[in-house]
Amino acid sequence: MAESTSSNEQVFEIDDLSGGMQVTTTPFQKKENELDYAENADYGEVGGVGKALGYAQSGSDLTSTTSTSTSTSTTTTSTSTSSSTSTSTSTSTTA
Amino acid sequence: MPNVLGLIGYNQSGGSATNKLLAGFVNDIVDVTAGTGFGLAISSTNDIEFAAWLDRIFMQNYSTSPKTFNGTVWSREYVGRTLLSKYLYPLKSRMYLAYCSFDSPQAPLDTGSNAITFPSRIFYSDLFQGNTLTWGIEWGRNGSTISNTSIFEVTTTGGTLVQDFQATGIKIGDPLFITNGNAQLTSDKPYFVTSIVSPYRLLVDRLFPVTATGQHFWVGSNWLDVSTDDGDYLTGLGENDDKLLVFKQFSLYRYNQVSLQKVKDAPGTTYSRSVVNIGDLTLYFHGSNINTRKTGFYAYNGGKSSLISRGIQPYIDGIAASGYRSIVAWREGTKYRGYVGTITNTPRNISVTNGVCTLDTAGGQWSIDPITDTVTARGKWVQSSAEKWFIGTNDNQVMETASGNSHNGTDISWALEKGVKYPSTSSVANTYTRVQVTSRDAKGVQVLYKLIGTPADDDDQWTGLGEIQHNQQEFNVPIDNNYGRGINFRFAERGQRANVMQIQKIVGFYIPQTSKIL
Image 1 (spheres, rainbow over the protein chains, first blue to last red):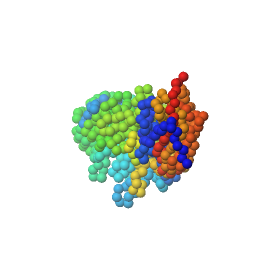
Image 2: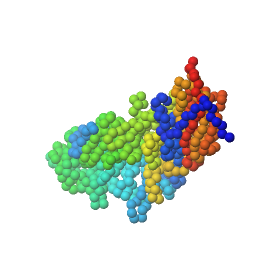
Image 3: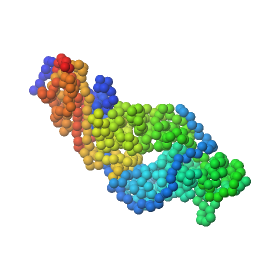
Image 4: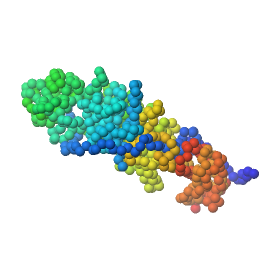
């Protein structure tokens, strides 16, 4: 037999969990449907929270098939500082 | 274990419809499905960037000579005289290269005998014509001038010349830069091409003052500068609304093939692999000074770029600066998923390993998703007529995502914390009696709670209520811990259950009490 609610007992309902994580405001500024934490969650069904899909390996572990080239470069690298004029037709403006 | 250096799917249009998923790995490119490499002997472990264009796959890694793949073999088709680049992107009728340097042989040096690089310049191809792609650029160390003439030519004392001004698309009006050699020539302003006389000879707009051989040079005009010498450098290319997006670390530009425009007050990206398009948005990660609150994920909508990760800022703050250049993102339907690695924010009690920050753009919801692997690359492939995304890891594996109910065989952890609920306002304490949970297919999910303000302190540990057994489940709140101003709920599960589980509703029963804090 179901128990009856105490005459002093009150009820609150949380029926919308679709706000996703929000941890930047104080608890008092949080929207009703926002969450403190959601891990591997899925929000595909509006109002509820489910579990996200995973991932699965495609093919086998990759293996190296060739030997590494032994060529090396001894020149040092510098940034181009060319200040010459250009015939490029592009223009740079600030939006 | 070595990293997967790059990923892309090749889907050949028409004909035999060859389809392959290709991965850059160690010193080769591998057909992931077949498990075989192409024997390319790539000379570096730099990231390998790919782009699909002209029914080919183009590859660049800023070290090995660029190559293209036609479905069967890799070759120098379409990239015979092409610069090395860190980034490439095809848009409309051209291929764009960013952060470039000269390829061997005969890469010219500057006056200090240093390699020449272009960290703030974009080069682009000519239009594809006559089954040929040219790049409008030529370079070498074998330039020669003849005094009091306008003749510039390339010469060799033996063997075949690698240059061909005609075949590579040099045009009238192209600037010729002499970068190393005769001091008078290298200090002079650029010469401009007036005639391409032969594959090996140009005429320029004025007379050379000296006769010189062995001059280092480059010639061409298929390029545009992006705020050179601003202390920043190019970090990636993208696309939005049919315009090329150009990323530096601290700025963002759009290019409509005519003019370059800086997006106002928009940061760039610290890693090109964080850039993903979903709908109208280009989403990406920018990392900088966390004290200015500029670090985070941004969305560019074609007009402006906005910080969208403010709601999870404590987690963003927990990403080490050393990880800003390792953030790899991919798309799963409407979800943007950005792998950020380790997240540590001790004052906020946050510690996540192999974390993925996920935004469902359909509803604007964030989640933090620990996974099992370290992600180093991502790529898209149409497999069996279904568009799929794949991620590469740091232990020589390629994963299809989203797929299955595990992380490649490892259980997936799942958790939900609602946040404190004050049923009678935060000034009134309550005696909590019961909790009812409405769910679907959630058998075995643990339900826990914390009380806030009991009456002055908060619970520092979660207390278990039990496990969900039915879709309508009621729990009794223990009477030795049922008094507080607010209550928070946590749901948790770890396993490989099918992802049809849903937590739908929480109902709490309470009796308000009066209270004072002290």
